[in-house]
Length: 274
Image (cartoon, rainbow, N blue to C red; front, top):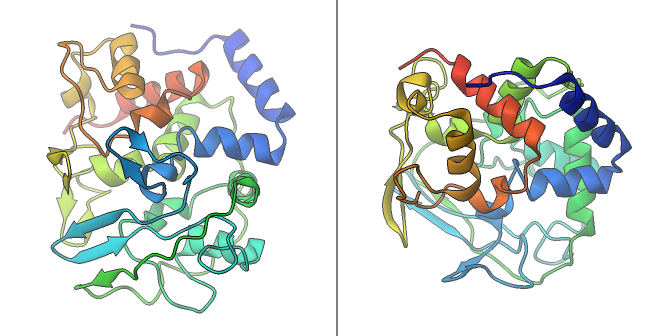
């Protein structure tokens, strides 16, 4: 199995990244690994509803909360059209709305705090570019205490060097793709990112029934070749032909470039087996 990335592939990926405008980078992230539309775009029986990208309304009904994904299009009345760039960044990385209220789960604020300045600015640029959709969404209800803050204000977050394949894969699985938010084992306050990192076991209720996040440490994925694992990530089809259930965002991950997929797999292979 190949657990390395060729110098030519790495150089090509780096060159493309450097050539991207913020909107282009934001589009690649949002329609790929970051996959905000997996929660924020309303879904119908055939997938995302046309003309409703990021318009919100998806309901997450769990024992500790009934959360509703908000409208994050530029609509001034029902979306984020009146928010400043800094306010959008604070909402993403600090879980703080302009009115000072705290954003609760399933928004993975703890991981988003590690989004680089470059990438979070690109995400904001993309959010500004999507068509505004007027869609008022209900407020989320939490039957659990929310923290007053997720930590001190986030300062500058540097880019992770693309030359460090393992670190880049960790960044994609963590702050960018928040894979570990769903695929870590459940703890008292949500996913256990320390003792159960990547071990799976979280369950998700929806129109599809109940799905359980699988173990993505080498204990769970060791039987897959790199190519088979990448196919599972990008198509949702296991080697035995069975399909993954939502909320796995395979339609988004299908848009990832080859070098990012290689780095992601490299990182997953490096996790302690659990």
